[in-house]
Length: 321
Image 1 (spheres, rainbow, N blue to C red):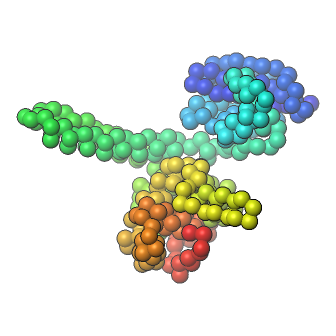
Image 2: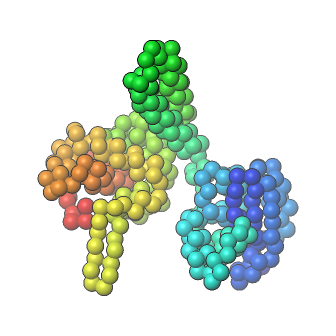
Image 3: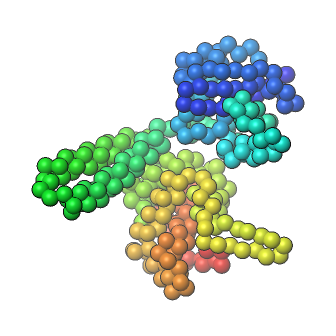
């Protein structure tokens, strides 16, 4: 009889359970979260395992996923919100690491979660995300350096130290970006750069965050993954859309598409006209740019799906935007 193994993942430890298809817990485990310990555990498993799964936990599930794929064991990653729903459904709302592992396992048995492949574990993602974080830190440091110079008299030496630190952050970011781009499809990046507003850096970020365009059935699915779709509330026959975004999916992809739209609407005639229309209707800069970011997302999907450069077409303005 096949079974699944579900883990609650933390930085140092994996707490897991093996469950039969019926949902009955057969065994419980606790192992260190490092490749050697995970490999030794998997190599000793005598049972037929359908797949291993865990929640998405930042970088902490990476070792588990990598070791599973190295051994041709299917690995599924699950949205933490699903586990929370299982927890809320219990009467006592009991929550421990072992309980979380059981909830994750039950959810996996209901065919929740997404199966990962080698593309999902590409080094491009951590390198490019860290580079973006370093650039943001450098920008913050630059602002603080300006404030420091305003309020501290005769601070030339201190300002120089702050300036050196800012420069070091940007140098490190450039180095990480170079490494990250080497793991991203050059052809895909070239295709995206045919879209006004998307340059070399944004193209690499967008490609690395999307990973495989085949995961998405259409542009709306990609918009939803980027968290650029508006929240919808319905009560009876009343259907209300507001300007608040769902912000689900990848925040890095959402920010990249927003910046691409902000640049594109300064140069692309269609995006510029749509931006002006939204502003005339009373939308602020952010709201109007988010609407254009949705159009930008559809362009990205079309270019990557077709495998051909962007061709200018009449911008279709729908009531949902």
